[in-house]
Structures are given as structure tokens and as C-alpha cells.
Image 1 (cartoon, rainbow, N blue to C red):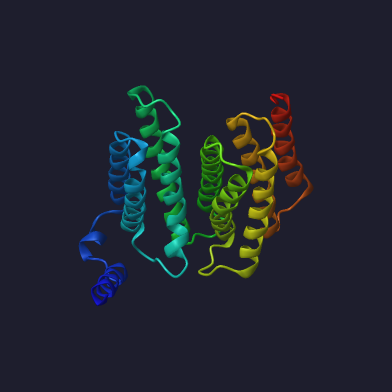
Image 2: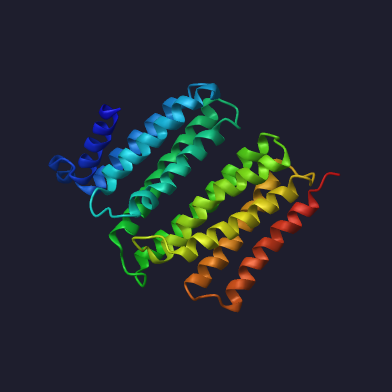
Length: 278
């Protein structure tokens, strides 16, 4: 028992005081090294059947956190230890699980790996920009926030597809959506101000929006929609509700903003109704 605590104590010391050689590596090369390493491991994992997921998922958690830390390295404080690595981690696991919904062949493997490499590099860069703490008026922050928001919707679509492809009962669908959506929304809302702590109202908003998405998942579980359309409908709801909440927190909740999000949700809802198969 004491040996376990000693391991964690040494790990904590390492994270607080990384070796000097790490700082000598230029940051852009750190991103490239991390991207290549994670991409190679993702490629390696695709050669095994899904029954090995219980091995690869914990390994992905460790590797994404380790290479994410290696990429950013400087200036990590308080809640950033969680929030900055959350998106690369969830994206990697969602992408890995989503791969098994496709036929396993090189024709699907190569585009899949290429897309993963580009995406993980973009997410690591985004985390680094959030860590630097650039002013919100700068174009760099706006670009990073947009990339983060885009991948939020991508992750939501992937996870919703995975959940509903399992053909579970309505309670598990609802519970799964609520659990998965909560950390995504919390990270998105946190990125609006990039504080070193989580404000209480952000947790409230995240719980509230997660509950709404969970109820929507409960409802659509009884509607005869194809899995992809169900995932698209829930993703549109996530995109719209989360976007409206972000606009409210950023004091930009104007009529045009509300109209844009409502139009997106309404358009996807119409598509869903047209594809009903009673």
C-alpha cells in the first residue's frame, strides 16, 4: 500500500518538475512527436478486434495524458490539468470505438488514421492556446474556440452513433447520453472565460443541458429513426443548446444568434421527420 502511494508521489513530483531536456525540445516538434506517437498507436489498435478494447482504452487514457502533457508542458495550473486534456482524450476514445462500426479493411483504415492525425494535432494546438491564456479579443483565441466547438459536435455525433448502434433500451440510451454530454458541455462552457477554477453556475448549466439531452435521447429511443439520423438529431440539439448557453455566458445572446441556432435545429428535425420509417 505504501509503495502505491510512493509511486503517485513520484509521479506528482515529475509532473511538477519535468526533466530539463523536455523544455529543450521546441514546442512545434513536441506537437508533431505527440501526434505521430498517438497516430501510430491508433493504427496499431485497429489490427485487433473489439474484444481487446478493455486493454486499449486505458492505454489511450495514459498515452493521451502523457503526450498532451509533453506537448503543452509549461504553465499548467489547477483545473487546467483536467480541462486541457479532456477534449483530446474523449475524442481519441470516441474515434477508437467508432472505428468498429465500419468494415475493417485498408480502404477505411487509411482515411480513418489520416483524419485522426489531423484532428489530434488540432486539438493539442487548441489546448495549448487555451493554456497560454491569450486575450479573447485576439483572433487566435477565436479560432481555437471555434475548433474546440467544432470537435465538440464531432465527438457528440460519434458517441451518439456508438450508443444507439448498441440497440440498448431507452433508459441506458438516456443515461449514456447524459453521462457523456456533461464533461463535454462543462469543458465548452469553461473555455468561454478560461478561469483556473470551475464556477458553480457552469456546473449548473452543464447538469441542466445534460438532463435535457438525456430526456431527448429517451424520447427518440421510441421513434423509428435510423441510427445516423438519431445521432444527427441529438448532435443538432447539443450544438444549438450549448451554443445558446455559450452566447449567454459571453453576453452575445442576440436575436440573430438565437435565430441561427433555432434554424439549424429545425432543419435537422425536418430531415428526421422525413426519414421516419413507421
